[in-house]
Length: 107
Image (cartoon, rainbow, N blue to C red; front, side, top):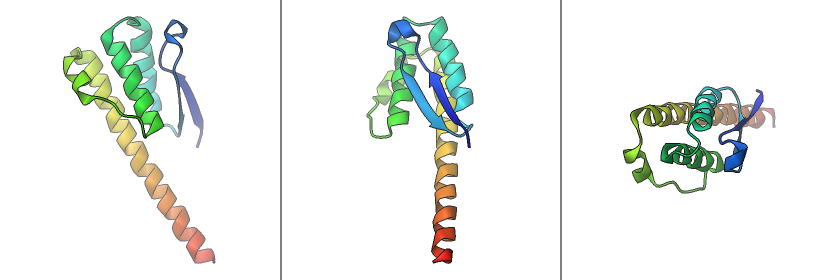
């Protein structure tokens, strides 16, 4: 597994970074980072940045109502991100279960 550190907002926005392990969300994050760089002052960029931060922190809250006012391209990015995030969480959970079973068998 490799670690990925992606900047999801330009330095002028405070440069929010998201750290992820694995390959999954990297594609969506890269696309979102490019979108934010091209549209740094847009409401969609702020929403995307806040959603990425909330997903990365796992305990942060995010108001889903913000998604309804997004332009279609930005909303498509949200769907891609959520799909990859869900898949990554499923894979991570299965890996954890596999290692727990292996550790239990060795005792």
